[in-house]
Image 1 (cartoon, one colour):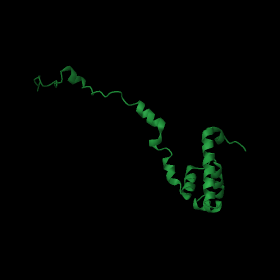
Image 2 (cartoon, one colour):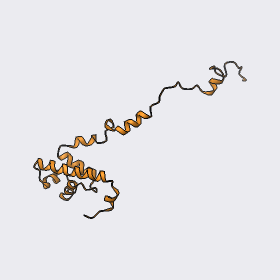
Image 3 (cartoon, helix red, strand yellow):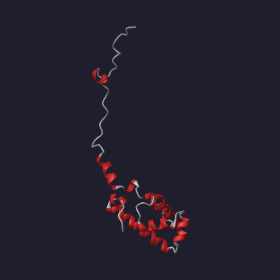
Image 4 (cartoon, one colour):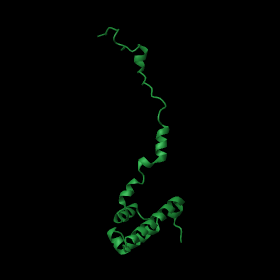
Length: 127
């Protein structure tokens, strides 16, 4: 198998995940007894593209993967891939940024110098 430039740029765990996804899609199609021709037609893709998806090809668009998952009745799970409720690293980072205690906001400088009174209250106007 010839390695393309795209294959070399993608991390190994990503390649493995796409390969597994492709195998799982193929297994799901076979369990449903759907031929490649029917599956490709329902997903509005060519049989060649379906073959690439089932091999976990990196060059196939996410939209095509989503169409195939929709045909298999699995598209609703696609929306949960990056759900914020399951983002452990993101949640830990948010928790780390929480303040240890909440302080009352400081008064503007003009109010601090005059003891909280406005600076014009004790002066006569020069009009």
